[in-house]
Length: 192
Image 1 (cartoon, rainbow, N blue to C red):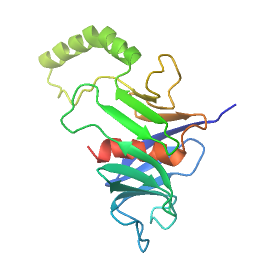
Image 2: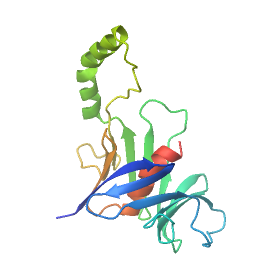
Image 3: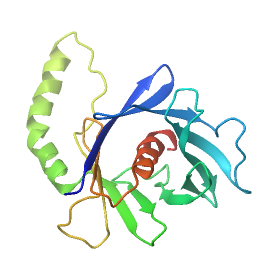
């Protein structure tokens, strides 16, 4: 039976940290690890490391040919991340291109989460009306949608990577390197 990796993204003092369940945290640092050269034509974006100082890198994410490339510390290509344009607002599409030619596509707002949002809409409207008549600040509200990365054309297949509305990521099986999943989780928020 394939293992499932579940992790959450946490922001502490201008740093991000990925916390896998039952494992050591993965620290995220801007730029490349100190003293480690990068391949020609690569612009460093961020590093995933096992320690806060970034001495033990797990993967390096660089901008290469207009896309983000996920590399091992030895510069082996793990994946290419393609993010949606910044101006795309309705159901942006994220893509992960693996070296074997597999493409995983994730769109924000799966159909079940959109239906749940529609069911909750009357209650949200009642809540907003109640806020309008009270002295409470409204705060930031966001639709409770999730994102699922799956192979294009697979109607009812299981998603390889999912992000819940609460920000929890889940990688099913051994079809995606955990370092690529970590990089996608950070790139989704840092690179937009």
